Amino acid sequence: MWYSSITAEHLAVRRNVGLFDVSHMGRVLITGPGAEALLDHVTTNDVSALAPLRAHYSLMCNETGGIIDDLVLSKLEGEKFLMVYNASNRNVDFQWLARYSRSFNVKVEDVSNNIAMFALQGPKAESVLQNISNEDLRQVQRFECGWTKLAGVRASISRTGYTGEDGFEVFVWETSVSSPSRAEKVWSTVLEAGRQMGIEPCGLGSRDTLRLEAGMCLRGNDIDEGVNPFEARLGFVVKLKKKDFLGKDALVDLKSQGLRRKRVGINLLDRGIPRQHCEIWRDGRRVGTVTSGTFSPLLKRGIAMAYISKEYATEGEIILVKIRNRLVKAEVAKFPLYDARRYGFRRES
Image 1 (cartoon, one colour):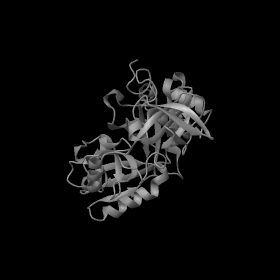
Image 2 (cartoon, helix red, strand yellow; image 1 turned 120 degrees about the vertical axis):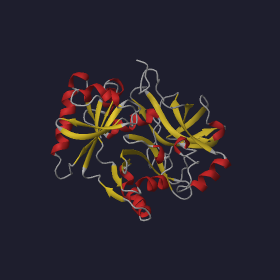
Image 3 (cartoon, one colour; image 1 turned 90 degrees about the horizontal axis):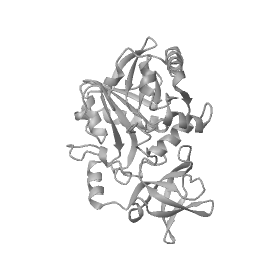
Image 4 (spheres, one colour; image 1 turned 60 degrees about the vertical axis):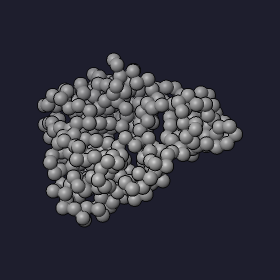
């Protein structure tokens, strides 16, 4: 969960750079003439729009429009795609893909235990990786992919992340759980390359506080099959103009019906730390529920993600969060919860 402390690692990523081992996540290789068609059928985004060495964020939904998982899909070449999804849903996601792949000329392979995965995140991520890369990383823009050599080891990279900051996902191929030497070499070399820039090895504790500040969902907390993309504010990756995909008919109906609740950010105005399942109250009645909550090391206050009734889902709306039978004053806030002019990949300096 941490190497030094959640706070130190969190602040290192916001101010300098941090390195996460995220090899626990699910990774699936989809290859063959039917790869694009399969992926267009099982995901909500438009896979046909992906050029080689490009990536996008997407969802897999069930037939009723509920979210099975969110994911990042990279097109490595014409008939070769790499999908990355949540660790907690690895088996479910793979079985879902395998089930529908039978109707397509495609190979679906779980490579999670044979490709190590690291995330280098923070405003100095490019500088650190450039120190040991044989490619010009300035040419790899956000949600683009590429190949490089790191410490003499060939690896693929994608410029994405789960912290709100600039950074790279690094994939070390042909390194298994039982023979991790190539991955260990890359990990050690990246840490050494960033030593003068304040790099910190980071655990899953700070990964969670960082993604919550940035407003990024966690499967099992903020999204699941009981949540649809529109109330989760993920409708931007649902391309209803596609000819057909799993859950499309249900999603069309859901969009036409309008929303009863929305996912929002919350800043506590009084002392307290909100947690999952905390109730949200307004006008003497319960109007929502916290799905993720923590104390922000950067903002020095309690923050949360929640679903609340549509009429109260406006930025600046005052609400009450019930924490251990105490109603704590809070306000609805937009994501990211930090000042995007000072932090995150859009920072101005």
